[in-house]
Length: 384
Image (cartoon, rainbow, N blue to C red; front, side, top):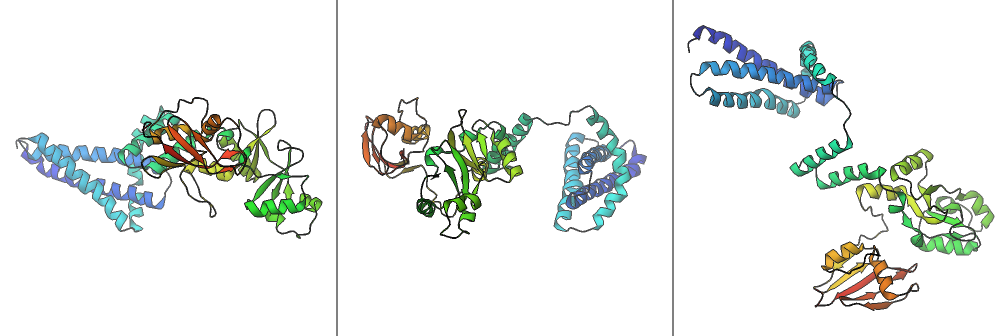
């Protein structure tokens, strides 16, 4: 070394930079643990402080070497990062205490000094982050393994809430259990007893004319001999109507503001499309949520090489993909629609029948509300 007298100064700078970087890491971890305000500014300032100290540390460190300075610079960067940044943070996480907060307060003036370039560099930046940028960050986090697939799907579903209409998630009118205002109270009681739902739409002349919503929680508190007029007064509430084109994010806000769990979905002509509950909205975010009395069954289940159990609600594209066939049907979206197209007419509830095609034999075992339930599909060997 030609500049030998500078060694003591270099050693002093090395020690000072190491101490400042260590204390900065401890202070940053301390405010992270205790949720002190201005955390984001302190994070950015700490990064500037680490960069400045790291630069001085490496610059002084390489002065002790005549050859291969670039190699020793890499080694010094690694040592600085490990000993002065990572290890102090890990130690504080494993040994939480209050004294690191005193270090933060002692360094608050230094943080303010180094926060000036942070404020200057961020002054002209737009603080708003677009949805596309957030999606890209989520995608990167998912691909790197920092965000699992379930979390990724949930976040994506949140972003899609303002794009999804209520009609896409609601229960179709053919599956809704309703009460006719012209029926006897005994019929109502039997329907409620058989289906065990919490709410039942009440209609007057036809299902498009919904006049109320029976709440079984109030209904079961009443005298069993109560008249229909008393039931309508005590247990039937005014229905909450919503257009089928309403986006589910808007519906969610409306339902929570009104404290409504149940919405009647109407089409553009005022007819009944179906019903939508907060349960349906939550399922659109997190996936299928099975209640205590629900059975978790897959819509498409393989029984053997050529035999499948398929529910009518299964998406037709999913059926084609699972069976590795092309049904050449562009008009129907569900397996139920495909079967009805092949069958030629609407089946009666409780009926059983078979449908034969060139590719498979469909054995219908369940028909409810004129919709196909469980079926057994036998794939022909020539189709596979």
